[in-house]
Length: 185
Length: 184
Image (cartoon, rainbow over the protein chains, first blue to last red):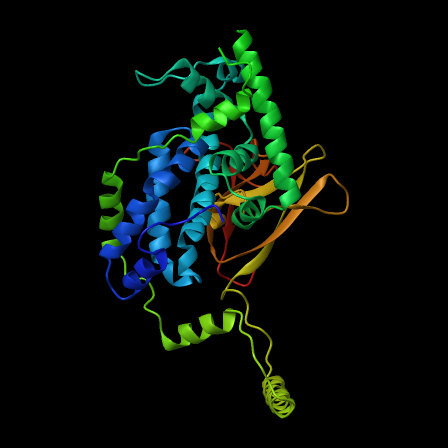
């Protein structure tokens, strides 16, 4: 699987948490924080939502740690929780967006405001990613950014391998078209 | 803007694969949140047995041992059936509600609401009878629920056959369903 741990095994840390050493959980959080944060950030498009979802995922994982059947695969199990939380947060964000944006044309053409120092390419990447349907974005990120195998993606998302391949293919095509279009402007 | 020799999508993926730094203060927030929680399920002996049963095991049986095991299983099955009762309902006081939406042009419809944390993946609706009708049955305990239909991963629709609720959170269209505690 493409979700691995390094150093002290996840299983050892999970066992310590089960034995009452809450501090061992801090090691697991530190181990997976940036890796999972990257997925959440790209999936949700902003740091605030990503950190909120990440924190929620870690807390939920702790609460359900007894249900992690294979502590060696804690990372994959945690990833599954994050993917689901991102879906929920994405759906909520879509609802929230409708409250503030009433003009779909303006939405399509609005430039993304970003902090200083972000390059035009950064903005273009975020713009293109944000325009993908959430399922395609999820599949594309898991395949090409998190570099998971399709079988692992299927386990995480609950979708079939062929459906995931189709989503990744469509995402690639859409991104290609968007980047071309952006290059022409 | 691009190096023509490199596929733009590959370049985008490579850009996204760059390490992301999340504020380490998040660790502290997580740890603060979990100290308020009970310890995560100290494993009981029953839990251990259940986990052991769920793991794959390889058993080697002699013919005689196999017969004895089969007999033991048969006895357990017979005893269990003698004491069989109807299965308990999923949750006390829950009642099944069918939600339906006519959406002839939709390719995917989900039911979202307070009962599934507004998670569009948890309650997909199925096309029933004609392709225009999407339905799903959900058990609900007494309470007041806001809900909506999420169509083609992009549109939120209130239930046209139910009272419209003003959504305090987002102002998006949603409907309200009140499930009473009585027998009606």
